[in-house]
View (cartoon, rainbow, N blue to C red):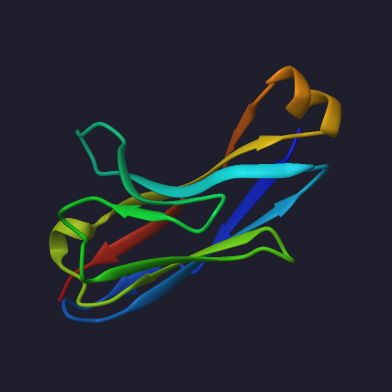
Length: 125
């Protein structure tokens, strides 16, 4: 099973910036998508941003123009640059990867999914 380790969370003032990183470890043949989700207290987990295999990106409307997702293909690492942070961005941020573990798994359509443990982002003055 692939493991994900997030880093970069913390406390920041409104208008500030943070950069989250998510590193993978384990056997991966190919990645379909890597993304960031977040969950605020009392709310459901929601998609923040996703980058699909070919490089296509999608963002939640609430973060468009402020957040940028990127990926280092050589390291199978995904980043989330967060600018102009707002108090409503406060949440636990989770990394997700959708992947095939082997060539055989890809041929069989046997996709897998892993989640990170989460990193806290707090935006407050």
